[in-house]
Amino acid sequence: MAVKAYDLTGRTAFVTGAASGIGRASALLLAEAGATVHCADRDARKLHETAALIKAAGGEAHAHELDVADKEQIDRAVAQAAAAATTTGTGTGRGTGTGTGTGRLDIMAAIAGIMHNSPVLETREKDLDRVLDINFKGVLYACQAAARAMIEAGRGGSIITMASGAVDTGGPGLLCYGASKAAVVQLTKTLATEVGPHAIRVNAVAPGWIRTPMTERHDSQAQAHTEGVMTRMSPLGRVGDPDDIAHAVLHLASDASSFTTGQILRPNGGVAMPW
Ligand SMILES: NC(=O)c1ccc[n+]([C@@H]2O[C@H](COP(=O)([O-])OP(=O)(O)OC[C@H]3O[C@@H](n4cnc5c(N)ncnc54)[C@H](O)[C@@H]3O)[C@@H](O)[C@H]2O)c1
Image (cartoon, rainbow, N blue to C red; front, side, top):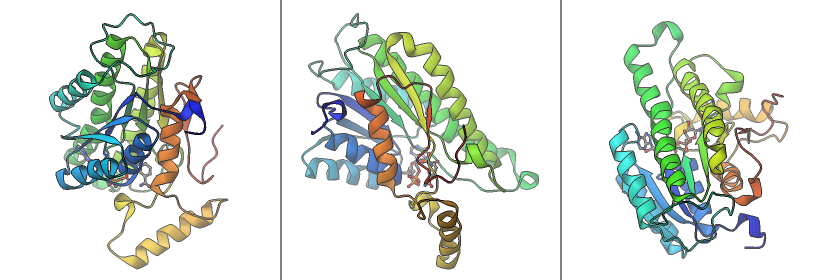
């Protein structure tokens, strides 16, 4: 690793949504940077594919098939991941050092999420519940489990949540999705203030339009139209790739961002530029 601050050797990471798109790219990159990566997703086939890709590249990976909306499943998997980890890694060097040394979790990247589109007047309660259960409560449970493990180990850590450019721009049909992501931003800022004294940093990534299975349209004309609009809106003149976001996740996971907490990082091609 050329730049030491990005070296994650000896660290343990837990990545939700690791079977696809941004989550898979992030899991692969964190492993490339040296972390042992616990991959979690409800899509068993693609989840094991991600773990196999990491191992084929020489990294260390474990797979946890789970539903992030189920608190018990998340609690159990995160506790297993922390317990399995050795305590010989470098840590952030900023923790209290009072942990028991029985396990460790250094990085949580809570990335799993779903899209939902419906006009406000046609939105049903069950749609709102489903989106909030996965996109907000799923992230909350992952953050809670990670923060508890990190506090217990006393070595600090980094928690990364996945928001969206939808929190900056809004748009027709985005009520459920945008509300869930706005809640993720609030969770991120609130948790950052509460766990900062334990040397745990909490930041959100708010990507712009990224080409993944989530943004794939069945109709190629509709796909070209949407990507054309996003491309014209971006000063960089393109839409994003999962690797664009994985690098933002790596930055927040690593010591390179050691003075950054409670922030929203916006890899969005310049589509929105809030203060
Ligand atoms: N693609 C974009 O343009 C974009 C933009 C902004 C934010 N995001 C966010 O990035 C994250 C990843 O999105 P993506 O584009 O990679 O999508 P994706 O559909 O490729 O990947 C999402 C992953 O989450 C998993 N998942 C969904 N619900 C789950 C559940 N209940 N339990 C466990 N796993 C579950 C899916 O199985 C899938 O592997 C999401 O939170 C999304 O909202 C995406």
